[in-house]
Length: 171
Image (cartoon, rainbow, N blue to C red; front, side, top):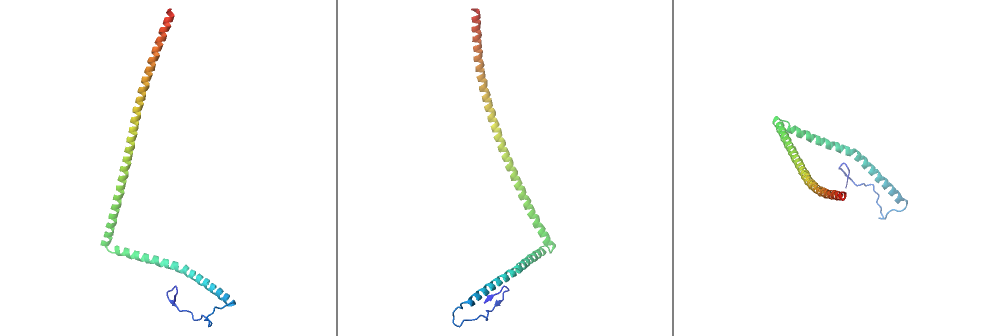
């Protein structure tokens, strides 16, 4: 037996005509039965859609009401007595302390990580500066030596030129 949307059982229809020959009807009668079954199916579908359009909001509001009632009952049970209220307040306080401690630990870790990274970068910069200073000192020493060698060579040449010039002037 078929079941309707309200949950009651539906009896089979007794109005259905039975064929005595066991053959299917042919001709114009077939077309009419197809058309009427199609219109019945469309009618049922539209009825089902209309029912759903009404039943969905009703069901949702009943579910919301049930949730609200259970929440209110739960709160009323917890806060009915002074000891129950104090127990809940202590629970909230412990949870707050835990959250604060967790936050402080995270902040300390982040600060330590930041300071460690800054120290690493500072030591890297200091090492690079020291290496650059040493390289500059080496370069300056090398340039100074080269300059001294060149100036000594120029001085020697100038002295030779002066000596040659004086020799030419005397002769």
